[in-house]
View 1: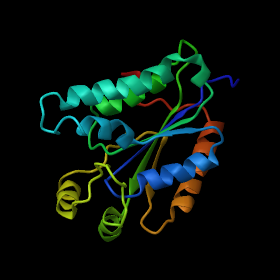
View 2: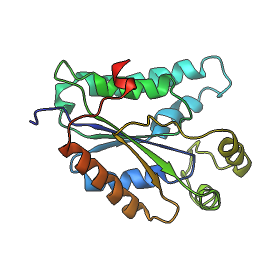
View 3: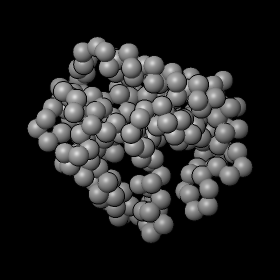
View 4: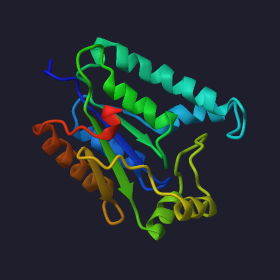
Length: 202
């Protein structure tokens, strides 16, 4: 058992930039790690509730807590690196649930929280968003270019802007190359002491 609990790696970015594909490649590089893709938590809810439904956010929150609570409270998960993907433009309840998971570890010390923000040029983002087979059958992944365009024009992916965050342009990177860069960052930061941000101190 390590002296500190294994960290959390939180991968955020626009729809279609390649978060899941890159996260799967990263999982292969980190022995014993577990990947939880945001659509594992979104799709079961969207099959029952429309996004503009009054109950949608409540059910999304309940689904996250159902998955995250065992990770936070089961001592057997202490040495497991968890990789999460998400697509958030602000610090909200969803982001807060992931940071709360990292900061609570059965009294054994907080997990280190690494934020990875994936950036991608618009044309390549569109190509990936509209690639055949994206998401697979039953997935609620965004495939509408007009919606993506509006999102990109109005918003930017949420950034923590601290020393444990990597902002990575993946426009010209294959998934394995991007994963290798994240792993390199992760390994280097693990050698250093934790950098506290205002989000840790709040």
